[in-house]
Amino acid sequence: MRTAYAAWRALHCGILFACLLAAPGTAQAQAVARPAVAVPKPARTVLVMGDSLSAAFGLKASDGWVALTAQRIAQEAPGWRVVNASVSGETTSGGAARIAAALQRHRPAVVVIELGANDGLRGLPLAQIRANLARMVKAAQASGASVLLVGMRLPPNYGATYTRGFERIYSDLATQYKTGLVPFLLQPVMRDAGAFQTDNLHPSAATQPKLRDHVWPALKPLLR
View 1: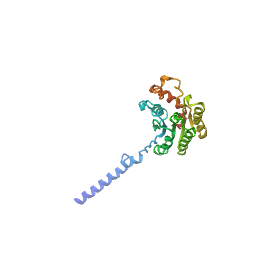
View 2: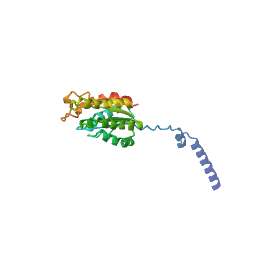
View 3: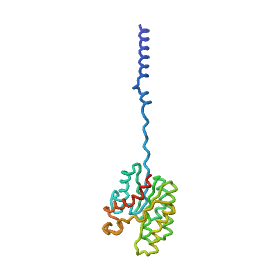
View 4: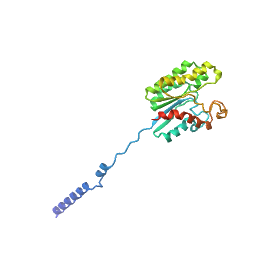
């Protein structure tokens, strides 16, 4: 009796096992049929290295032109992110000292350099300003990043020779190193006293969208 039962059980189990192997809904069949899941590419980075004009001095960070640009990029150029490494009071020497670490940390595909105003307001040597900005441009390009230079101008009381020489730094470097260029960040608001905060130096929150719109045509082509 036991021998007959054992034979029946073995036959029954063998048939059941064969049916499971042949069934299209088994875990094995599902594993083979399951399509591969695409892994999204990491976002590419726009690194902004500027002074208080880019650090949203006196404003909420979200109101500054850099944050507003990040919002536009999210809408018009998905797959990019913006890192704002701007520091209020920063000079070109400070930027030149920081750029290597910033490049290593963020590995940007685009670097926006908005520096020089604090150097100019202090009357620092033009050759020094040029050399510091050139160092930053070359470091960024050596890392494989595209560069956008955002320039500044000085009040006329610094003298024609100095102010014109200061302004030419940005266009000369852009030509020499083939970078993008915004000649003067404050161009859209420079003649509107009501566009500035009470210090008469930093644009108000209401003005920041104009700065974003001014920079955007030069930045957009770099987001390839």
